[in-house]
Amino acid sequence: MVGRFLLLLATLLALTLPARAQDFSALARYEPERSAITQQGGQTEITLGISQPVIYRVFLLAAPYRLVVDFREVNFGTSTPQELLGGADAITNLRWGAFRPGWSRMVAELDGPVQLVSSEERTEGETEIRIKLEPVPVEKFTPRKGAADSALWDLPQPAQVSNAHRRQDGARPLVVVLDPGHGGIDPGAEDGGTREADIVLGFARQLRDQLRRAGMTVVMTRDQDVFVPLETRVTVARAAGADLFVSLHADSIAEGQASGSSIYRLSDHAEDDATRKLVARHDRDDILAGVDLDGQGDQVAHVLVDLARRETQPRSLRLSQVLAGAIKGAGLHMHKHPVQGADFSVLKSPDIPSVLIELGFLSSPADRKRLQDPDWRARMAAAITRGIESWAQSDAAEAKLLRQ
Image (tube, rainbow, N blue to C red; front, side, top):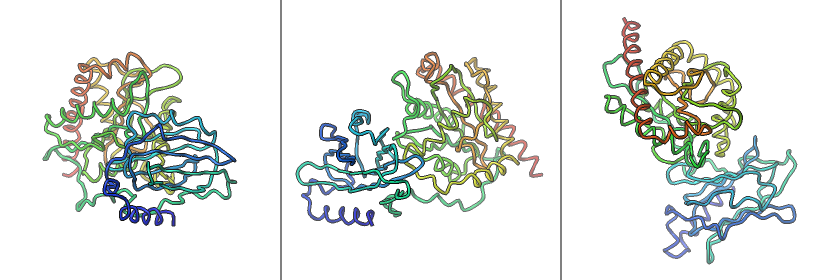
């Protein structure tokens, strides 16, 4: 009902507002001086000042408790969510940013279950969105309220592939999908004024150009600062008919020390405590971005893992080893455990050899300097390209033998 009401409201506004305010697809600007989070009488109120009306929706999610607001579209500029925090204990964390092209998202992490008391967009005079929440017992918490399922809000359906994708045998260009981690509302690790999402996107573009010069076909899961859900990244690879999936990250650790590049391939169990923490961090991206993961049960993931190990997983292992050898051979610094196993969601494709490359750790000043060094980036892109070329040649030769 709430979703239908918002759509009706948008239609009425389009008919009644002056021409200046009728373009709901235009980019609205967030105005921090007219925005606030306040708490009074047990209720928490979020006020967002924006430059013009937008279509939006509001809904709640659990595990953890979150308020999610989607906009079409708000530019938050250089304002940080922390500037708005502090007015209410009920909101423990806040993040916002681009969700996908044409859409923005705000996610407020809550200290417990709440109900949506009201949500309105005021358009008389200066435009503002006001959302009121109040705490409720767990049994009265209603997730997904207001999250209407419609083409307006939901992601497009995965592309249909007419024919089954056959394993590459060298008769055509290798199709590589590059996956720059994080993006948009999820900046990833942040250290020393550097954001992981920016670092890996810039490097992915450089690596893409290098691979294309080597004769490969390259597809990017994102080529701008937008959020892409974890499962969608794998869907992009399958729709592209990928022969290979390479996810790129540059993480940060809060405890201990770590430096150097490392290659991850799919494994039953994380091999050490640091790996388990990285798995929790990477696979929590969708939760922090307000994505509802209900229904994505462990059983399906386990089936994919089992299928992957029958043929694809040995190929992924060989790829990780060849890449590590190529990076070492280029004289580039690697982690003391250069090849590791992990249960990252983006590695769970049953039919596409997949690896995740941690280019380095932003928490390490030395790594951070390397990641921003043009010469190091060029050498790393060249080493990865050589590794992929070497793996592709041996993998194609094996494919030919299997088909005989």
